[in-house]
Length: 513
Ligand SMILES: Cc1cc2nc3c(=O)[nH]c(=O)nc-3n(C[C@H](O)[C@H](O)[C@H](O)COP(=O)(O)OP(=O)(O)OC[C@H]3O[C@@H](n4cnc5c(N)ncnc54)[C@H](O)[C@@H]3O)c2cc1C
Image (cartoon, rainbow, N blue to C red; front, side):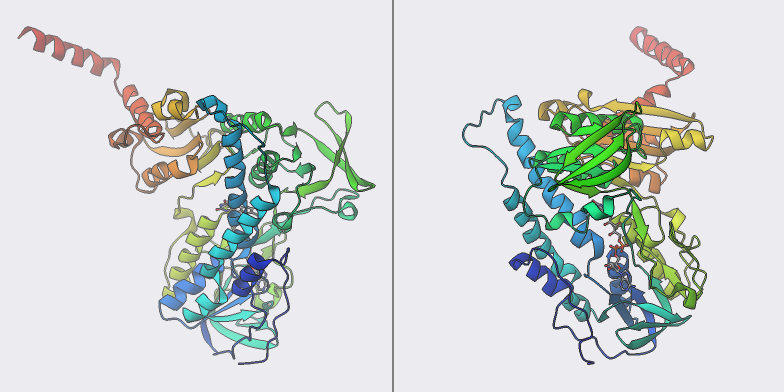
């Protein structure tokens, strides 16, 4: 083993949970191993894409090195899915208590949110989960783990912590980070991003969220429910502009119901300090100049790829500072020995997408496979309440591509279980190729839409017609019955006047024979 050349990393607050997280994801006492050159595979970045690449390759018997400059687990474990969903659970618990009167439950006494306790629960659970992504676990899997910044020094070698790793194949899995909008005064005023917001221990009384995409909306609703007064500034006419418009409107309504102030079509002009407060100057949809005074700002305006300092030029890898590393459909970069997976190269910036892109890379890099990223059917979910889950094309995308569609929509208000649960705000909407049952896309809005979209994903992956979903028996009463009902809706349209006439004649003959 070489002397430890890993730089110290902090995660705030330095409590027992975060120390446990660090001990798993970036142990201070770690010594990088001596390189066992050459490697079958060297992976830069130990987020989901990197971890899946490294574990998969090691499991197949390859000699693998994995390089991570910060925390194993990347965004998902440390600054993304895991902490956000931990907080969302606390916020949902509060919303259920707040709304308990609708169910005839009257809760008296001193009710409230213990913000610090909600944050602590999240840190504890994150630390619990972190073992899965730990240096220890990956070492035990047979992966050589190097903590430090990886940088290509040539087409077949990477430098890390003063050592050189040589490879037959490499994977770039360096992910992304929060993009910062170029707004005068913002930098000087200071702001939170997904990398710092989960370290907060005291509730910001007034929070300004910039950006109404999935991260902005999830965290705006969560912080509002946890007791902050949240104002969300968004450039578009409605939040979640990539989603089905009706779905986005429903989430918007729910956020307003929670008390989130929405400033839509807002253009942020400047940010200044006023004592401890931060003042956002923006123009609203009418072009009026407005002022918003907050205690903290959370920036969630999109992601920037981590390409800096990677030495991509030395490796002959082409990249774009906005969209990341350029890959072909088999995820190969412009250097045929180097592949990429995850947020660094994909517009599907989700953990499950990073996972399956990494599997595609493994097949193509190690076994000369010819798997295509475009063959994957990738759903996603925004975990607001209600959730929006989606797979395939939206109505808007189909129109833009000139594809004629038929749409079938089942409102949750007509699904018994949703009525009983008091969760009728939502729907299951499916687009099929016009005149056929071929599913092109689907959106589900429901409290647990993320758990429901898999049925449509399965149908699309295996080319099942929407009519086939009518045969999918769901237990009664479940909200998932909405999915079967979209199959029924479709089948009803197959009852053409001619078929109906024949049926009527047949039934009449049966009555009289
Ligand atoms: C707030 C938030 C909530 C989210 N919620 C969800 C969700 O609910 N569901 C979902 O599917 N997705 C969610 N995502 C998205 C998800 O986190 C990402 O899509 C996923 O983490 C991408 O994985 P990755 O491996 O491509 O990159 P990352 O997780 O970003 O990992 C890249 C790693 O590479 C390391 N690295 C970078 N450069 C170097 C270098 N030169 N040398 C060594 N190491 C380097 C970084 O330190 C990092 O650890 C969320 C994201 C955010 C920000």
